[in-house]
View 1 (cartoon, rainbow, N blue to C red):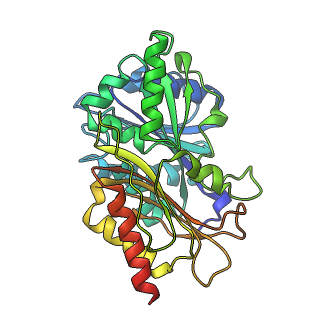
View 2: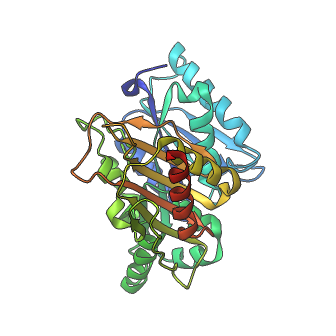
Amino acid sequence: MAALSELLPVTLLTGFLGSGKTTVLNHLLRHLPLTAVVMNEFGEIGLDHQLLGESRGPLALLSGGCVCCQIQGTLAPTLKNLYMARSSGKLPPYERIIIETTGIADPAPILDTLLNERWLAARHKLDGVVTTVDALFGAQQLRAHEAAARQVAMADRLLLTKTDLAQPEQVKALTTRLAELNPGASIYPVPNGAIDPALVTHLGLFNPLDKHPDVVKWLAHQRYKPAARAPLGGKPRSEPPAAHDPRIQSFSLSFEEPLDWHGVLAALEMLQAFRPQNLLRMKALVNVKGQPKPRVLHGVQHLLYPPVELAEWPDDDRRSRFVFITSDLDAAFVGKLLADFTQAASR
């Protein structure tokens, strides 16, 4: 397996129909180092790629379906073929990959392929999920289409497009709603698709520009409403989700006492086994009982990525901190599950 610094970064660019993904992509390709693009087009005849400006890197087209469903089986072979052609010199030595999804795609199955397919995972790393949101119609789309809400909830960075066409009160209300759905994702306006590439790269836990993983920034624990902040076994304090849209909510859990590692894993594995569609994203910094160093966890639906042990604590706070973005999943239930399993495992 390649060293972390040698893995090819992959950015997932998603966003609902008409939200300006291709405009943003055109801008990025003009400013990023040599980049390979994988575009997914829905329908028998793909047209979106014809709107893509001149690209120095290779372009691969997945047409005839949505990359998150029937077309998913072609994503891994496409990435493999690109990598092999790059290695043999048949393609230029591109330095990163951007996957642009259809407007109706659920990001989770795509992340599954990137992170769970061993050959790909040994040569690529997920650099982040970037979601475009239409300032004119985004609020309506979030109310009417769960796919749009899921794309927002699973993002590492949110790009607000068409702000020049929307009223200021529209932009303000939408920004507030986006922050409710995904407090951990920073929001940037992108007039005419223009965005500093530095703002949409190195969004994962491991940033090669940092001397150490910036866990506090990545976790963004302080931005989430606390659902529980009590000693292990204490009663979680639950806050009701926003009344206008109870499907998706974000919350944090924290535990004062060190947690049993096997109990943490058992609780998360049960949650992922029985409610995978409801668990959109999870991030955690865990104080493991009997261990001096913390561990980092990251999960998407039924996937729990391999844990990472940090060399040191990122700050003076020694609590275990979890952040969750869920769909129709009660915060108090999640808190009780973690508390019960870690208590039982420690006996």
